[in-house]
Image (cartoon, rainbow, N blue to C red):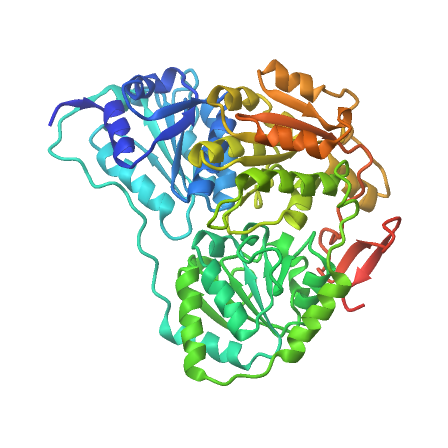
Length: 580
């Protein structure tokens, strides 16, 4: 076995993990690692900001389901990365972050670009390592990948002092690559208890979250729903587990759900929550969430069970395994109560309270441009196996509208910052997804406020020739902030409008990217089709100056049953109680 430096050991271990590309920015403290990387087959993506590198890794990991890697130097490089790491933690995304650090003898002396990366990262990572020797890397790096991918996935950070990267080491053999641990098997008694509750329920409802999507539980969930008459709602990250147009699918629950979804939640007598944290954006005021329902909670992370609400039955297991076991247990029980009246009620509620987005047929409106983009994307992106394009969003009104109306055909196709709600996520995440799945077009739905948060990554998209189509909703403001000011601050709009407006078409072209302005085209659908058919990245600006509020909306801190809705003619709003 040759003698290798710590940096060379890291790169070889990444190669053995199957890493094909990674994103980052070099600096003084990680230059040895970059020097070793220059001799590797691993493709380096030079981001223009470390936060962008973190989100590129996130986009790759979300699209592929496998851990992805990002690099940063010490000090500001590491602190710039922290937002992307915290975002990955809340959304359970497996990334491995390698940060350079000052030499070990200089730790704690306020050296140039020194910061306690390990200490800063502990609250926002699944696990942190501070490497002390090159030989230790043989254990740490595979372990970082194992931890990131096991159970509930998450980010792992490895801090690498410069002397550890340059020190030489001899060793006898390479360790095995780090792989995810097998999930715990569903407990038989817990499954039986859940089957008993579900078998007796007259108005059950299935709630699918990101854990169900990540586990590939969509087929088991669909089978359970169809065989045992379970209507379905999804969290933001669970969207796509059931096709948008499936008759049992009520769409997203919570703050921007349809009135139909929140009505059914209010009326169910049993909620089967799978792979979700029951966070506040989904539940609204928790003590009034599903007030008459028992709870079956399924999650691979046992610490989530009972954290927000005590369940009557809980299963700590992989979502697909748990749902399959639950179906078998129901088959053994046989019989079961009739749910025809419940399904009839759900059909009625969907017909009466389903979403009716304004302007859906107008490609120049905020909703209509999404529908037009979906048609343009489908014309070039749909594959025979039913998986459609990947859609990344930023955070704001465009994000909620995308969740409401984008026709998702499979799980995990919507890449969005759900837990941390990070503006600036969309573009770099879309780049990462496009690099991870080069055969798929990736749509980045963004707003002008969000795009400006990581606009420098336009250069990265061009440099990588990433197949990213940026659909920019340009309204000259922080739309969702303005909406909340207008609705909940007595209309006092402050610090949410941009008095200086950028020319985004010129900006994109300045980075070398093709750009289209729908306001200048007589046929916006034709312009969209041309943009989507073109190779490489492009930006499509859609001005939406007078966009209406994104509704329905549950006021912050209110119960899901207290929604602000549009009237039928879209010219006024009313507070609607879901029992209406």
